[in-house]
Structure formats: structure tokens, C-alpha cells
Image (tube, rainbow, N blue to C red; front, side, top):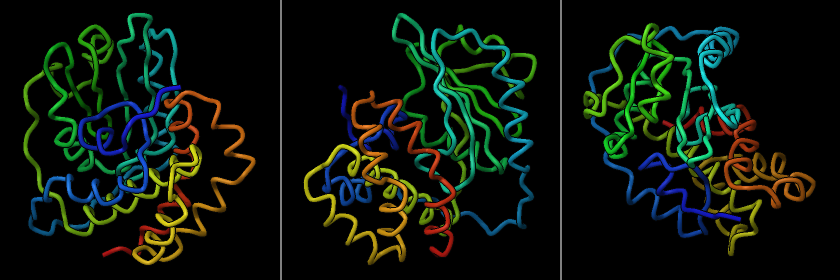
Length: 242
């Protein structure tokens, strides 16, 4: 069973969650400082039903050997749905739909170091594709621009958004650690609870003994996908972060 670090996942767009208690400190140290943009007007987002409908429309164009459904972005506060597309040659592509258009630009900026050497990206208003050139073809007619490996535009992130993203990332990382019985995970939960009120309760109520038993025998991508179902619970902890 493969285990990898949450820091690599969040910063470089890797596939899986993981990492011991030290990941909490390391994650904060390694996340690039957020650029502060002028405060824009409140952005109207699309509904959960619209997000799901967009994903269904897009995914019908895909031909994957295996797909894994994603119910939240493990490193962002903004609600999202998505699919990971796997192939026998071990290549993988990612499709995500976000509630707010502005999130797509931030996602691309975070994944920017992974583009090139066969990995490309393209996007629509609320969706983003990141993966192989061959997998990008079905989306050409729906995308705002041709698939490219060039660096995406640099965008700003509001301090509150950056803080909420960090909160979500740490909760998902600790949820993974709880599944895999990482050393000192209880201590990590205590520290998170001091920083984000209600964190321990949210983790204990979602990653129960029964859930741990179900997930611990699975591969990382399936653990991650299952944990993404708890986006709403973790978002309720992070929504008061400023």
C-alpha cells in the first residue's frame, strides 16, 4: 500500500494524502506566501446541482480505464466535485468543477510546477482539466483556451481564502493520518483544535473506528476519495477562519 506526503500533494498536485504529525508544521512552512489581491466584489457561485451537472457533462467525453470520484478538493475551502482518470500505463488526469470561477485560477497556480513533460491544462468558467495531452482532447470544444503546458497566469489570493485553504488541508491531512494510525496523530488533533475550534470533534465524528477499518486496507487514491466526502463537515470548522 502506497503512502505519500500531504505536502507533496498540496503543493505539487500529487495523487494522495498522507504524512505524520510533522506534516502540519511542514505544510505551513512550505505553502507559498499568498499574494494579496484587492478585495473584489462578492462572487456569485454556482449551485451544487450545477457543479454535478457540469461534471457529468464533461466526464461523458472521457475514456478512462478507472475513475475515482472526488467530492471535495482536499486543499481548498471552495466546494468542488471531480474525477481522477487512470490508465494502464499509470498516467492519470484530473477534472475538477468548483463553485466559484476565481478558484480555478488559484488551482492552476498551485499545480503550475507539475505542467510540462506531457502534462497540460485547460479550463472552462468553473472547471479545470490537468493531465495528459491525449486526455485533454475531448474537452477542446468546451474549453476557454487550447490545452497547454505553459505556466498559468499568476493570480492573487485573499488572506482569508488562504487561511481557510490551509485549515481544510490540515484537516484532510490529519484525517488521513487518523486512518493510517500515524504517530502522534492525537497530539496533532489537539493542536489543530486549538487553532481551529471544533477540529477534533469534526475529525472524530467523520473518521470513526468503523471508517478506519473500511479505509485502512485501501489504496491511497481510494482513501483520499472517501475522505473527500467530509468536505462539508471540515468546511464548517474552517468557515470562521479569518
